Every structure is written in structure tokens, then in C-alpha cells.
Image 1 (cartoon, rainbow, N blue to C red):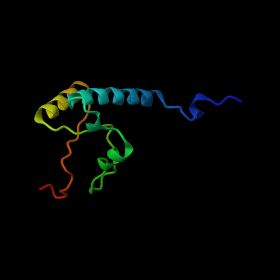
Image 2: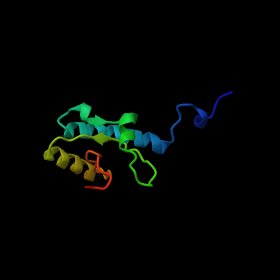
Image 3: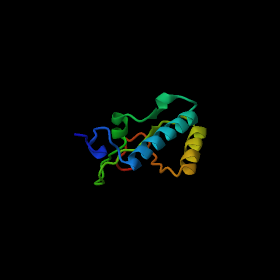
Image 4: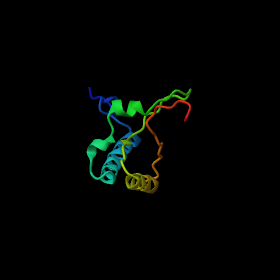
Length: 101
């Protein structure tokens, strides 16, 4: 008996496959924006989970990519890429101030 495509363990809906391709493309663009340093572009679950939740009542929502720029020029380039690709950006500092000081 053949299993249907949707029952296959590696099945992903078309929109999900397109999203994965888009995230991979963004990863390469962001890597170039941070001087080609792949260690400053993160897509691992543990890294994404660190940026998914805060101390508010909002449900956690992990990002697709986390980028660690080290200069104003890198930030500008990352934001230019995000603007051109219509990718939402959530800035994150050091994450140590619940009150927003």
C-alpha cells in the first residue's frame, strides 16, 4: 500500500518548503552583510529559542534567523536587506533589562 504524500514523514506543505528556501536565502545575504562570518548568523533551535520569549504575556514566537552585527555599517546593511526582502526585524539588545532601562 502506498502512503499518500501528506502522510510521508518528510512531507512539507508547499508554503513551508518555500519558507525554508527563503530562510536559506536570507541566511546567505545576512552572512555577506556581516563580513562573511557565518558564526554571526544563527538558525539553530537553541539560539532561536533564546530570542523567542520574554517576560511578557505574549506567546513565544521564534525568529527564523538571528544576526549578530558588530558595527553600524553591518546594521545598516542588514536593515537594507530586510527592507528589500520585506523581512520583519525585531531588534534585540543584551536582554538584561525587564523594565527597559
